[in-house]
Length: 302
Length: 287
Picture 1 (cartoon, rainbow over the protein chains, first blue to last red):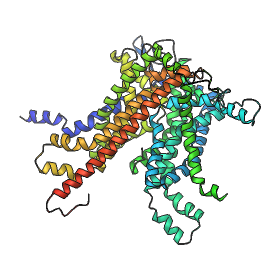
Picture 2: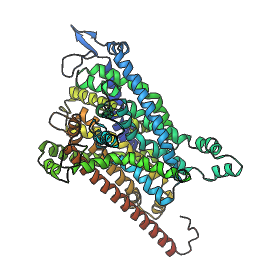
Picture 3: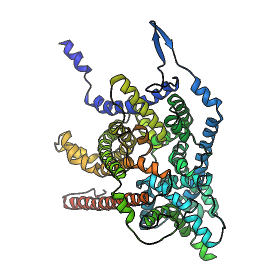
Picture 4: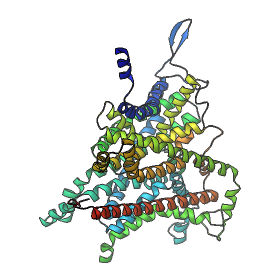
């Protein structure tokens, strides 16, 4: 009798089951892979399938440790990796800054438009989210290449004599990055600016504040969460961007996503790629924790 | 000068929207260009579309992508809705921080990271359990689902949290079983967010390059992978044609969907008002 009772209490109730199933799913396919990355970053690369050795093996019944810190030492000792990390962070930072400089006025204008116009404009910002990101990045090739639209136009206008190099360099990279990530900046800004009580800046104006004073002392501080949200939404994925540097950037403008990709697919050095991945996660941990805190506080409009 | 100043805002918005849309328009326009050069317009032609129809590699990849996107969307909606329910109904439980972190992180995490880590998982699983054998549709399905689950979960949980709890409570008071409440009250109310989640998952999967690159096998290749390998070689009018088709289908779907949702919302509001008007002794009309 008492046995049956204890057995029963071991069967998960509906609540535990409801939480447990998605929890295990996420743990298995999201958390566990990260631990594996850490594990394989300590392994030695080898010409086997899969291309790495186990961390330990048994030889004559005794365990032999095979793990190594070489992959991390390689990364820290190699200028290519260091400059790729620095360059990725720099590109992500300036992309975020440019997106903010373009996105803030855009969001402000949209938030202050008449309701009908506002909805249409918002839809115009959202639509690119749904459209193929790959095709949108690709579309810039036709515009920026040597015989592309931009050069043809400039030549036709007589502003230049010879085609300018507009892609496969830093300029092309930034154009592609800003273009792809601008909507991620505008949407949360819009959400916060529209949520703002319009009476607050009005009150400041009534009390005699000049327009720029109203902006810097009322509007800007109140939209700060939107700025942070948008900046994180742009910065974090930008650090690991692969497609845009591949299609529009130059080979010299190394970004870490591209280096990892080539370690993985071209030189098939999985442990090295895993170590680079682990370090990238470490680099992004702080901004991601910040993002998580913002999301829990009230959520970012997405 | 004062004209410029007055319309500065409008002009700025115009410039931003030109920046956002001109590249896409150029893809559409040049897909109908007879010449294969991007800088000169010769004459209107649908030759590139005809060529597209004979391109078996592209068509096969397209079919694979659509099947994959369909499966991904269905899986993501089921799992995402489940996660969304957990987030909305059980706010505090052991591990609630972890689960919300696991939902939020994929929204911003660079895909290279999740791609590599999932691949390493599948390789380790194959070594241990013999599944999955190699990579292919199944591994891509799981990878794509992981990309989309968060979006569905967050929209569903937002919808659930903003829902009027008195609606389901009223149904319970009137004697409905929890299952009946779910199918008659909760499900219709969260249907728009499920639909939006399904569509978003479909497009994310259809468009995904990086996850697919890591998780696809030698025999299965998706449309974006074929497109990317050709884009590396530069402009190609056939890609313009394919891009135009994608842009067209997506725009129609998005505009159609938002039109449908708007109509639905209006109809719901109307029936709510009618119900309130018909109800006797209504003191509270503040819905």
